[in-house]
Amino acid sequence: MNFLVISLSRKRTLSPINYNQWILSTVLLFASLSLYSQKMERPLRLGVHIGYSQQDVFPFGDEDYAHTSRYIKLQIGTPIWERQRQSLEVLVEPSVYFVEHQLLNLFFIKPSHPNFQENRELFTQNRSYQEYALNLGLIYAYSLNQNFKTYGLISVGPMTATADTERQRKGFSFSDILGIGMRYELGKWNYDLRFSLRHVSSANLRRPNNGHNNAGIEIGFSYNL
Image (cartoon, rainbow, N blue to C red; front, side, top):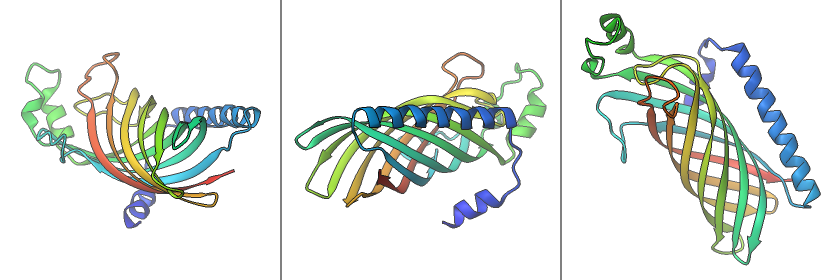
């Protein structure tokens, strides 16, 4: 938990407009999912996950840059299909990522780039910024017994970053996540351990579009309303 305390205690420069839009979108999606679960008489699952991810591990390990993140995710989910031991759940994940990024290979920025010397000096520093993401996805789960489930996750959604890097401009981008996990259910409480791969880029809508990759681990809990 120390990494979260350190990350949250640092002075950060936030973008009020993007932050307010992120909050509004989260509230609207939560309200929509709540209405759906009530109408279909299905439980709504609410929870929180915390995690850590980095770029320099399998299957990534790009030597051009270092990229780590500590993050907090809300979990808003409801089942849409169930059959014997199988189930499918819609998941909404509003997330905040506290990122540290550093360019390691200064030759990644070519002399043909505008202001390449200034950019090399800037991006080879270890810099901190935030990302606000709102992922929408599906969880396919299989029950091993009455208490344990394994599952796979896929999600995608818009996000905004508060700083430029040599690989991506600040502002609007997309957050893509693949994950696998295990869940222990005890009454209405759920406890999760999850491994995930995340890719962030602007889908060629803006340049540069090299994007960032991370592999991470997270833990969390949720409650079935």
